[in-house]
Length: 270
Image 1 (cartoon, one colour):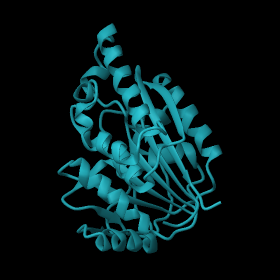
Image 2 (cartoon, rainbow, N blue to C red):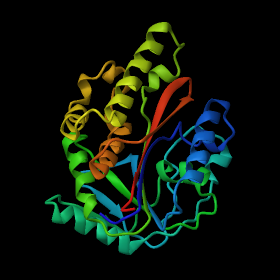
Image 3 (cartoon, helix red, strand yellow):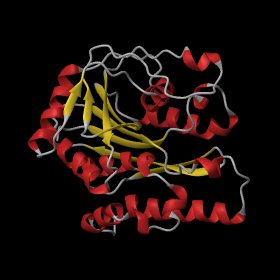
Image 4 (cartoon, rainbow, N blue to C red):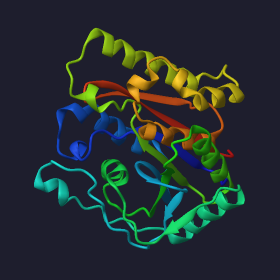
């Protein structure tokens, strides 16, 4: 792995709402803005988005990808959002090669644009849109071990000051977002968040145990209540697979009425 790699798992909120002044996203906006100020200035950004699944890991390789407004039912301004960051074809080739070298079949996609898992948080964090970006898909099997292995494969990358973002949501039960909150649902939300913070941050857990906990995440308290489908959770597996150590920074934000977590790994040779 190259030196000075920052790895960040974020809860990215609901569609374009963080960019529309929605009060239920205020804490998330504050956290992402604060985190961006604490990170080293990246030379490029790799985003693993919950909103892209393919049969094999797929990497955007276009020089100037368009935006994909992959949401519906929002105000007209939601479909006029701009984030004209460049792509980074050379980095895409490196990612493809790293996966291939690890025995993971992968492909490049020069036509696909960036979905809102990339442009919504990055418009908050890096509004100038001047940092080259590449997006990596999830695998549609949604297999935890596959995504941990993808992260481990990315350790072969040699790109100074790379920022890797797992763009998901540590709580993603759509029905619960729009149902009245109860003491039971709040307790289940909190139980999973506490398990997740311990799993990612506790220095007394061995890396073998941390890997096992993430591999068998469905055994966590209220796991399937918080993630009826795990696509918003698995970007975390890629982040941890790459980092291979405990996260030193955990942030929490209430988003759409639910406690949600973010985790940061700062890897450096100094």
